Length: 320
Image (cartoon, one colour):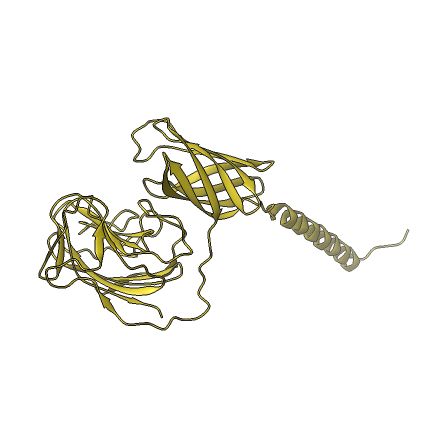
């Protein structure tokens, strides 16, 4: 019988272990590669609410090998997570619990994917059913740094030049201050903007709430939040999507400042002199958006339906 040296035995065992390990890694690598779904991505949705177009938004992505998950912004409330999106043979469906809706049932969404479009119906927690349609959301990635145009001052003197109200107007212009003494209509600029830099100053009484909507689609929260932890629904947040890195709100009744740069989806926010959001992507529209046409310019609008608020020194510098 031929003798096998310990060295030869060691080498053979080592080769066997390496071979087995390589095969195991390959097996796990193959298992870990999820199957891409044609439904994945972001979708700008318009809901037909009794003849009125109302914006919504959907994002779908995979989780592991077998499950699609995502998030959804309805025409009311903020972005909400979806634990599972069912998709088979071109048909999609999902449910999410109610948020600010008055009903106690889940929001139920069903639809069909056809090429680069989706459409279907949704039933609200109140039991009302509406039809909807959606298209893929644009990436809005900038190809180059913008050149800035001439600053436009949107508050001056005792007039509301360049603005219009969404309903019966309770806003008052006094000495360069836009003041909403009570809950009422929102205020929207007549002009629309793409990329821009924005300076805005605001103050609110204790417990009040407002917001600055960029392009009429992305709300930056204005709240009485002194001493609170940063949150998705408090001052300096992009409502439901991005929390500020720290809370820098002043006492109720004091003037605060926002300096905002929006290029495509990328947002930088300086609040009261501190950068609290640095070049972060806004995934999609927030609740209360005017529309879901993200590829188009949009107006600036300030919220006046959640309590008293004052704004001054609103200056927007659009990209050329």
